[in-house]
Length: 119
Image 1: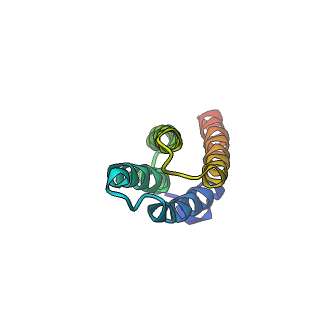
Image 2: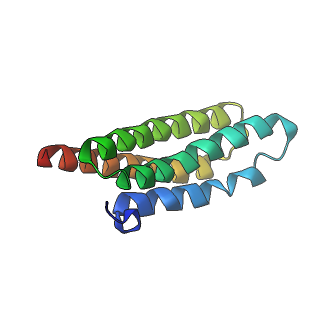
Image 3: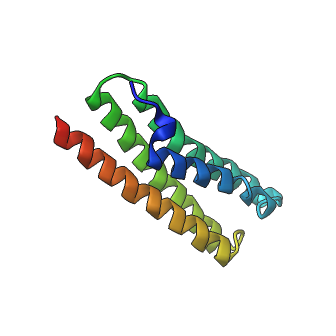
């Protein structure tokens, strides 16, 4: 078992989730409530799966949970695109969060490759 808090990808994913909590300010209208909940669930899921996988005790389990995090990155990004298209989230916020999730995805990819190479 490794300390997930020391993983750079978890740190970045955690920051992304914290920043996603600023979105409810833009999604206060009733039409935005479902999207807000969906975005927050995806954002929370990214670092949560990294942490859970790190505690599983085996590299195959760890990689599986990293892939779950990758899926949550895609879900988060898709939800942001919907927020953009229905004009509920401002462009500057979308760009910032989009850049963050891209960086998390790149870090996940590198970590998955690294753990797979050890096996």
